Image (cartoon, rainbow, N blue to C red; front, side, top):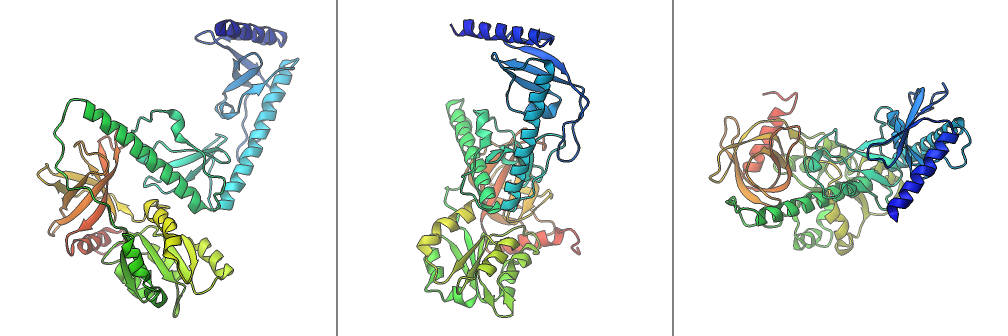
Length: 451
């Protein structure tokens, strides 16, 4: 019955095309007709350079709709109904109307993304918008075909992963998203979820395959996220530091902005909470100062004020603060927000440098990094490491003793531009003094550093 209805639809479409005096040919498989439609000289107006074409190639869908195939920008239009069209010119009008509607959608999409604080780009003549976000690959951009719908990039953590369903790459953020931070958090969290799912499925498949020798690993344990408290009020805020420690955070307290900047010479923190008033130095100024440190990219910073000031809150948000709170702080209430900040970074907290260092894990053969930073490394490895594998690594620093650190595998890369399998390793804990030595090395290879 279904095949009979399909034949009837195809025959009805053929008769319609004949009435419109359009030549058609049968598509491969015989389920549709392909038509070349000559069109007028008027360009398809678009933001930037308009589209010029003398013909449109489309395929029929059902008994009254078409799908544009070429020129390429028209492929992104939705299905177009040609029911009621009495001439080929009327079909052209429908296509141009769909194009104008698409341009209006893009303009609304651009306003929405810019209102959130993003700077969308249009990739050539394709009628979609792209937005870069918190991934280590600057070319990894999410595509937005319409407001509230994002197509996640195949580059970055998803590179080389064979997603079980293509639609998994399509992501619809919550309607209550109000800022670029919220959007970045939502997309990076979605990517991390997909990566973990694919890695688990891959691991399960290996378990059911021929047994292989598993790498020697340390017992898996949760990583303590490091929080820096800056300012006298936060230090004395009813045992705030202790309340955070009870919840599993590794907390360090300092009094001044200069002490905060100095602390980053010895350690790398996941989150900074700072008093708004630090004497002559405003807590807001710490945002830009931290980004200026060697090896630091964008640390989430939460500004804590003695009372609510809307103007200061808006200024902090414009400068990139991750949040704004007022005293007294209710740790139980803010705990979910802090967890989101440390688990789902807006962007990479620490820069990675394209340095090749020799790395040894236990008795394994030496391997090489292709990127190294304060918070982790990208390791070229053929070993069958799986997500959440924790090993003790020794990094050979030039002219110095090796740095010993526990590292956790957070993602795998296969078939990427590296042409070799690689693993993203997040650093957990260093041997005494080794983190400071790694930071000193990274500062020495910062572009422009005096060696």
